[in-house]
Image (tube, rainbow over all chains, first blue to last red; front, side, top):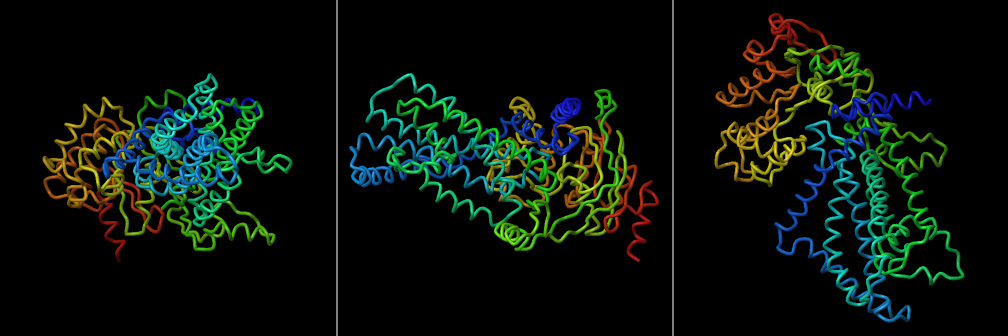
Length: 288
Length: 258
């Protein structure tokens, strides 16, 4: 068993060197080589992502900031109504929903796009043996860059309202990284599954809508006091949103949140490798 | 796994009893809802090509290419030429059998594949080269050379959607052959080039294979066959029916019509 492992790692390294994951030998070695090669070629993902952001700017001067403006209007309306519903001051409600929505937009838009990230790039996939994971990374990067536009505006508002900067703010870097790690396996899994099952994008869109309501974005987890909270503890999106929101609002993340985030990442990436092992050699046929 | 020393022998491609099945999904077999429903009624969950009709495009295809192999791939429409090229290029993986490939592939399978219509020729050169894995410095160095080879001049500043088919072909060919690939895979569209560019392209292909490696080109052109290739493979219904010298190949191919 141990010897087989070592053998596989040599195979993967070999495949990475000759630049083709399909030449790694066994299907599982090919799957891991695909993920590794995609990371090695991350510059390509970055160039494609920046190119798409630029394309947005080319169509209008404000570019992605148009999305920020519509988000702002949404935020002000929701804050106006729900701060009254929950009987809270606007100053304590607005930052919660603003950052929650910033994180949720990033997550939901990335997952929505993930369904088409292989199909939309089939031109590239048909012209060279590229790792599939590369296009998952590209989808995450593109949406991350768009979200940074939102962060500038929303961060400014939150800073103006709260006006405090603590040490906990720094933990936003590792926490966001963990969010991205989790998001990436989801993108990879959905990207593959949507090539095989054509009705999956619709199901994903519906699931995201439901996820928005069961995740504390416009509401507070504390409002659940005295009720069942299992659906919150098992909700990966809750942790992903909190990874951005808690540090930016000056709360420190609990050890439980970190643990849950890491556990979901390990389980999710295992699923991604499992599906990539089974599907990698068939993906090119499903796309066309 | 091949040890390091194998690489130094130069590029090679080895196909061993390769078969390819194309899945053709209908609405039912491509549906996730139906998969769940079937599982609910007690059916098996099939995550692979389950439920799809399968078309065999290649069957029992074996050959071995070494440095200096210059193959002309012949056969009727639907004989499996393009599929075989895609297998050699690593774009598709075989359903059965194995392929071993050593060397960097340059593939010219379709005019304008991976070319963005809205971008200018020059922007496409940079983007496509990036995707092919060239570094920023390499691209800066190679761009003038690529531009010159296309002979497109001021048109390189125009969006590709304004290009004619021949102009697109020039652009794609120039990009794909900018850095000598070890294994060059070319589909038959290269024959649609005008006379002057066809000669130029042939010269470049010949130069590339002489320097490094392997050429696989789908073609029925007698000139291309005689000028460039040193071996011909004829496919019929996904099987190899001829593999050998180029001389008798044309005659054999013409007999196929009867």
